[in-house]
Length: 328
Length: 255
Ligand SMILES: Nc1ncnc2c1ncn2[C@@H]1O[C@H](COP(=O)(O)OP(=O)(O)OP(=O)(O)O)[C@@H](O)[C@H]1O
Ligand SMILES: [Mg+2]
Image (tube, rainbow over all chains, first blue to last red; front, side, top):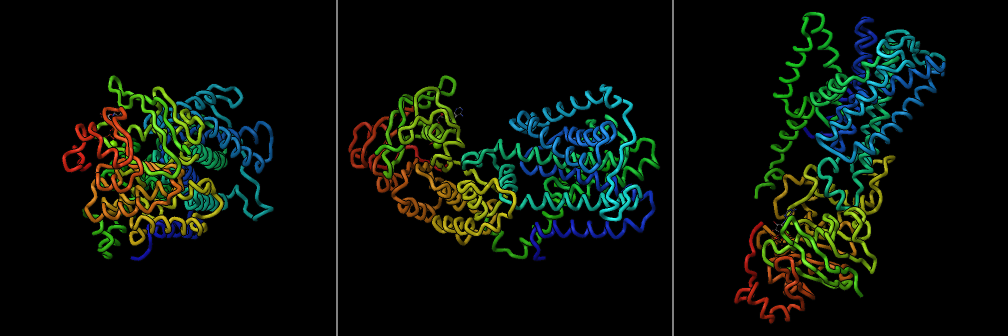
């Protein structure tokens, strides 16, 4: 196998993208709903993973999902904004809130960062939970989908069109994060994850890079929220609940943190397992937890991470000289 | 002309005074060695100079400007680069990518997000030049965690060099190296450009005596003695406290 680690990752992503686009239209309307859900969740997982590149693991990412959803829902339903403009404003709000929250959050790392992000998301949750503007805990229906029919011929109110749209958006988000990862900025994030102190000593402002990553993550997370609320047509505080933050974290870890495509696989897996388990068992969340603990134990670096390590191992054993360099 | 200057620099860890009233000047383009027994406060002095630690009192001046309040990143920006006594690298990156990262930060390329890193060909050439300078060109594609300890030490120096520093601080660059690797590092630091003010912490007295224009002896955080290699060799207090009969450092050891 002569492909590099990155090439294998990209190949896996490309195969998933093509398969999804080809298979999804041929499936039942119900399956198409699941495809849409998984693609949206995958976008959300990508937003977590680009932040994880810089060594920060957030446990409040549902805050961004909820933010994007409420911004989009609020603007379209309450202000009668056109959906297209609301998408961009929702993303902009994700960036701005990412910068503001990031100024506090990004100074910390590890467990403290987890606490700060969780606290911020919970603040947002309790605000929308009580807010009369958004109808509090009961939530608010009637959120429209984008109208791109004149542009593309897709009527997003059709399950098949909407699922295709979600898959295309997910592919776009994936291309964006993969591209950023290979730019100097993305490479610096990766180096920061490996050794932030050395980056400082080399003249890199770790805080600024992480802040930028946090804002980028906020933008993509808010976009996932925009997509999510278009799918369900319904605004609910639960979008910002810590359970969602936990779900996306599990997805990223199970798929392989920092591999991007791992989050996409994790999202598909979660949606699929949720579906088959919840229709067969009462305590399906228990089963889901069990499965994920099992995967985490067997594949400590996630599905994709462990697979890539395995291909690394194969490559190393084929070109022995490079590997034997290490023994001193 | 003085490049770097410290005035009554003090640092304590709890009740342990590790840097005590250190007042030193480092002339531009000259080479200095700092010697002293284990725990003398040599690394701490570097940490103070590079901004990894903040001094309790005293001042640090670069080209006459007080930089005491600048943090480590700002000091890197104004030309202070260091290597670390314990390897402090990017373990998952290749040798070349490690150096390229340092070059990208030094050249202000690191924040850009509109072009792949690969498309900056100048960066790659600069990184290769540094790799060649430290003798790592054959290992350029090897990941750090697969690199021998000695080569990691070379890379440690390479990262500091890639910063194109005005003041270069090398903390025991030869520690833990085989004799061949030590000879190579010795050759490398002797061939460093003369316009860099270089300060090396080193236990190997053969290297120190040959390399340094001036030697500073630290002991319990104080400057015990300073002078040319000849003066240091002749100093009775240094002989008594630090040097053995043959001029070998007492207390030199592997890391
Ligand atoms: N961050 C720290 N906190 C507490 N004590 C420290 C810290 N850093 C160093 N020390 C102590 O300060 C003293 C000086 O340490 P330093 O590393 O500066 O010595 P050194 O001269 O570099 O020694 P070596 O030759 O072993 O590298 C030692 O006693 C060390 O234990
Ligand atoms: Mg030391």
